[in-house]
Amino acid sequence: MSYNDRFLMTTSSSLRRVRGTVRALALLLLLSAEVQTGIGADFSAGFMAGYKGGFTMRLTGGVENFATGFPLGVEAGVGFAWMDPGIPMDARHVFINDNTNGTPEESGYAWDIRLDFLYDLKLLKASKTFLFAGVRGSFFTGNFNFVGGNEDFDVTTEQVGLGGGLKGAFAMGRNIDLVISLGAEYFFPATLSGHDTSYGPDGEDVNPREGYDYDDADAAVNQPKFQPSILVGVGYRF
View: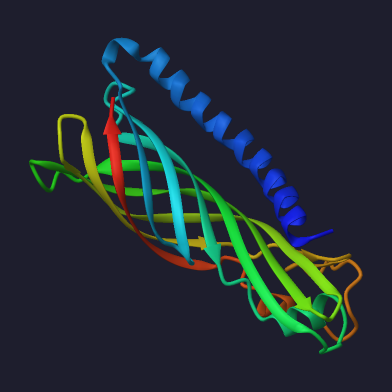
């Protein structure tokens, strides 16, 4: 199976998980707004791009003023980032064999989902400055291809994390904002799976290679850990 075929299959699987979570988050936001229609909930949507472990793009949707006296807004989002997957030869040793033939090529990416609570700091009259914090989910795939070495495999992991930061929305028109976000995220260690082998942070391994353990797999593969981020984009207020 070619890398492009595996990329499409892995991306399709990740997208199904992302879509399911996004549907649940969207339903939560819509139900909140429906219950509080008379209060006049404020909806927004946005697109941002920048750096978070690599070049990343993000779509967001949020709602404010959906409950009387509740000081926080809610924002859900889904993102995609291109990432450095790790060290090809080390990954090969940990997951496949100790051979060194072939020319290594590597690529990596991660889907992420998020749900944040936002607090308006009211720092500037002509804009909004939010402090945000919430939960994260990450679906990472690293591909290692040894051209001429007959080895081409993916290493995947699914993680839970936490994140927070500051977000500013600066009006550019009646309903359009320039949005800048500065933040950081931490993802907890999770099982790394590749070929027919997996290594768990709790020591529960499947078909581990002799002499290797989770620490070796974690050192070879760049699953998301601590990730600072800076993103710039546009937001639309409905």
